[in-house]
Image (cartoon, rainbow, N blue to C red; front, side, top):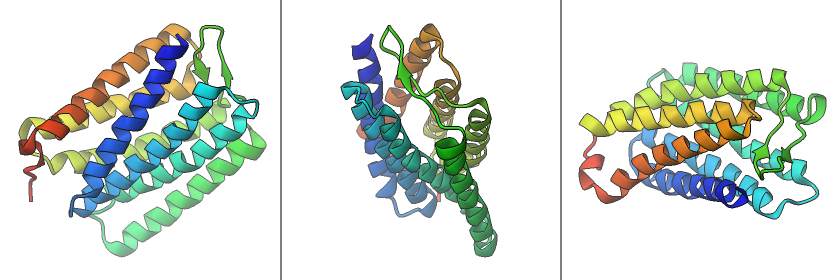
Length: 215
C-alpha cells in the first residue's frame, strides 16, 4: 500500500505540473491564472510526496511547507474565477481571500496544529482539526467552483464538460483527503482522482482540437 500511496502523490505532482504548464502558456488571462494555481498545487504535492516517500521525523514541518503553496493556489483560483469582475472589485476580493489565507495558515499552524501521521497500511493522514477542515472546505469550494466554471467555458464541446467534471472530482477528492481517516475510503478516492486526472491530461496532451478555444 505504501507504493500505491507514493504513486498517487507522484501522479498528482506530474498531472498538475503538466496541466499547469499548458494552461500558463495560454494568452488568455483566465487560463494563465488557472495554470499558476495548478503549478502552486503541484509544488504543494511535491513537498508532500517527498514527505510520504521519505517519512521524515519532522513530518509536520513538511506538511506546513506544502500548505503554504496550497493556500497560495486557492488565492489564484479565486483570482481565476474573478477575472470577469471589475478590476477594483477583483482586487478587493483578492485582498479578502489573501487575508483569509493568512488567518487560516496562522490557525492551522499555531492554534490548531495538524498532527500528520501514517497508518499501519501506509496511508498518509493530514489529521486536520475539525475547525480547520471546515475552513479548508469553504476556501476550496468557494475559490474552485467559480474558477472551474469560467475555465470550462473557454473550451469547446466535450472538452469543456470534461475539464469541469474531472476538476470537480478533484475538488471532492481533496475534501475527502482532508476530512477522512478511513483507509478504504482513501484508497477509493485516490483511485478516482487518479482516473480523473488522467482523463484531463491525456486529451490535453494528445488532442490539438482541445485547444481550439472559445473567444
